[in-house]
Length: 493
Image (tube, rainbow, N blue to C red; front, side, top):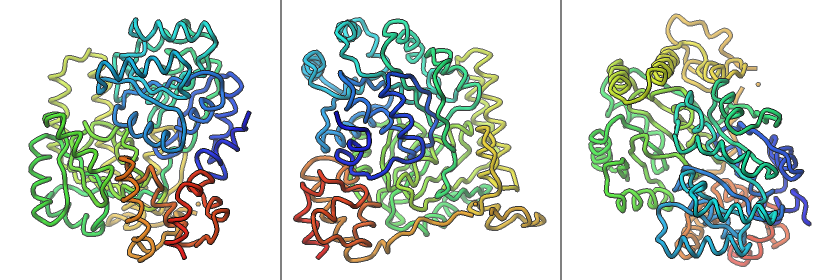
């Protein structure tokens, strides 16, 4: 059997694990359980994908994110991993075909929605697999959805508490990027992870610069901000569907390629717009909070909020969609007190319990408080997740202290040093992107599923001359070097 490091190199093209990935993978490989708290873009998926590939049987990944399922399966299949998904987008025959693959042991990874995993028909398949020892692991992604205290509670997740009793010998790994102390306690209790180690990585995303402004002329303010991100992919979050449509139309009139996304759009249009955002370069998605969970696009250079999010968890999760490739990105927010009134009214008019409404009010108050602070935004944001940090040197309050606020103490000693990047207009980099777009269209996958921007940057800097050298570039690996080597080396010559 290959080791976790060999699989990381040979399948995924990386030479080294990041942070606690290796320790988590080893815990699951040994048959143990784990709770994983890791920021967006921190590499949570590898923590269960590698053990699922190496352990006997199929790894069952439970996720509410339909878009993420398809993207991850596409990316895994392009790497030669036997992966599939089951969700409401599939027709009956596709469901039957996939279930047959599961029965025959033809899959390493199966992504499945929470409402389907314990339906009688599918649960019977799992029961049969369990009896034969053919389930490698259960990975519960977005695990905060199981918590009624959490910002994104989903009732379907409560049934997942049946998994520990029904399949007690199968390793369980619960993963989330956003969970305060109370949410962590609920995840642990519901999924019987009391004795499991918690792998808590820093919530810090040092490459993201946080900026907040009070609302004046929001469209003018947005355009001024976006002037620093011409031709780059980004997300603009709005409070209402009408505001989404209006903002998208206005941005297009300003010469910016923008698409709308909200629950009121025809499903086919939503999917078409989402696919364009994932596959094309420089698209700006204007959306309500219906968009984004599971959008695994690494080269989003900014996330803008035209209005106050409902909670710090929601804000952290939404801004975390920027800069997943580790390169510099910005999170910009424009807000007014009217946003608080809108959210408060929604809370009061909801059918939630009194307890739930109380939770939502407290979270809204915390979000408003964060938007008004004059100290380091990153330090306060991390403090909300029980993580101590000094001033960061990479937020508006650190870079340009408010009038009357001393800059003393706002200079971080651990200060952010932007990841070295190559000129985005470099002819070689542009040639590599054009080649990648062609390959992505041929394979009908997002461009980043072929090679990430960060990998393309590395190629322009390292200029490998042989397939062996090409395979040593992080993000390429032996498989891609073999598959794309001739074309890449010709471009790099």
